[in-house]
Amino acid sequence: MSTALWILVGIGAWLVLSVVVALVLGRVVRMRDRQVPDPPHRPGPPSAAPPEQRGPVEPPPGHPPPGSRPPGPRPPG
Image (cartoon, rainbow, N blue to C red; front, side, top):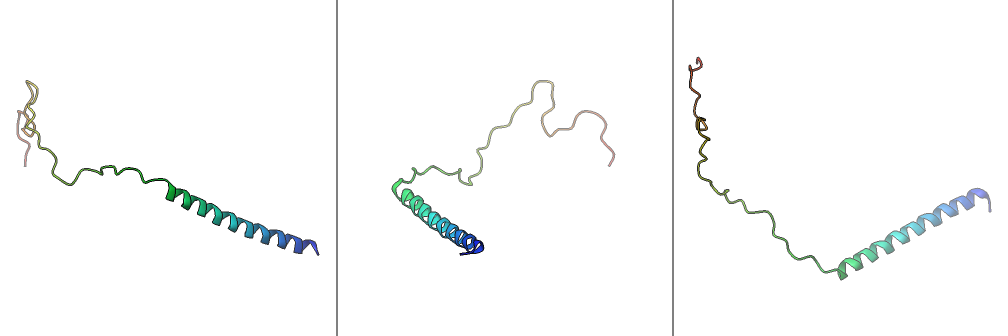
């Protein structure tokens, strides 16, 4: 047999062997997954309920309450 034919036989054998190894490995992983029990159910994120409302926060002494204007002239407009 010529050298080119041996190279083609080697490439073909390599492809066949790689497909067989991939199939066997896939089967082993699938069988292992059947043997391992599923982990316990973990609670998911909280439901879409509205967040808990907090009471108003009082500003520190000497500061205006939030949303109020600072003292001084009003801007034009």
